Image (cartoon, rainbow, N blue to C red; front, side, top):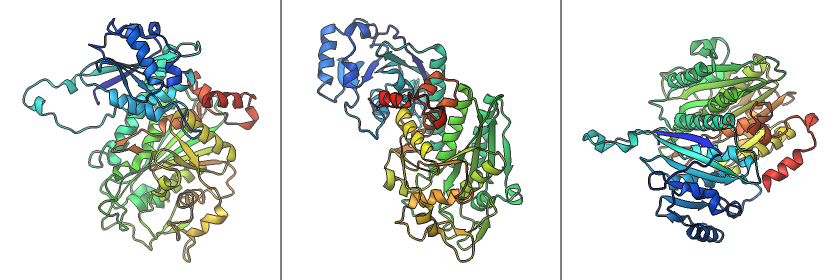
Length: 526
């Protein structure tokens, strides 16, 4: 799939399924609104109106893929029902449909029947079906045969918009291509093993994005972290051969009135440290950089699309390794906030690096809104499941906005309890300001982990703080999902120059609600 290029359009171009396979995707309700004449240009005269009408009738009662011409032209229905905590776009189902229909060696078409508010989440859903990372060898190419996989192919995603919606503009199609690129970039980094994606390599990835955006990265690394007081990042990463780093990308447009910081956990590999993981728990820990990867992809897309406010991406990069310099249980570290932490579990390392990053965003970057994103706890999947990230925040309005952004983007979220008075006592220490791991793992584990981060800002912090724990939705099976890109640019859609993102993004300030937010929400969920 690495040789696949994705293109987007709202014009259905003529094609022949023999040379260019096509799959038509939509809910039964939406498929019922189209006619043979609407789709006939995709069939090259090989599908009759009777066959097409029969197939449309079939998908109204059956969830199965319905062939129109062999397996080269098919209708793939999405689930008809969608609960209130699922994305109305059925983005997860779209990814499955595209994976099932994917063909190699031929340019092909995906036609999506939808309303305009579902265009963006369906585009990122398609992107998830085409991962970039692979180290599979091709025996035929070694024997001198031509490898079809090495021939670049184009997958054209064409939208048929319902309800007489205005067709997508060229700029909107370019934005969708950039969104797909950013999702695939994020997933590629997460899929790449640590021998190819350590802190040095991640710095290179940041450098590529920075060069594309015309930004100079700000980097604090290795012993300089220790000298400047970043006891969390340095303490976690000091045992690894590739030193830890704090990296910042900053977008500072003229006329900005707000400062937003996205802080990402970038643990390139998590052995657990001296509190080492078991042999079945350690595989997959290459994905522990999912938060930082998602923020890199989201920052790229936000800036390329045009972001109106100051935006900082803060990457907390380290490898949690075992070695002579490893942090020991019982060690006490002083974090950038000045607060001391007694280490009682070296496998609770993500909160340590994020605490440094979040306090840096507050103290040095003067951020009004701080969001951290991380593959933080195994308890997240217990609390909110495999598809919904757990969100914790000190602000109810932003909590609602996060849930709404999850629904419209397809990167689903669900709140967990924010109650420091019940939960923070789990970190009590006799010799330091706090421990880094809870006493009782059955007491709102994921909430506690998030509260540890906020504790370094202070529970009376007057700004907006949000925490996204996406440990489970960072992957589906053995592949990364690119989670976080769609969520963040949708959450902050009101600050984007993209009309598509503005129209799906939640209202971010109660004072600027134009009275139409409830109507927009109803339209999205119907």
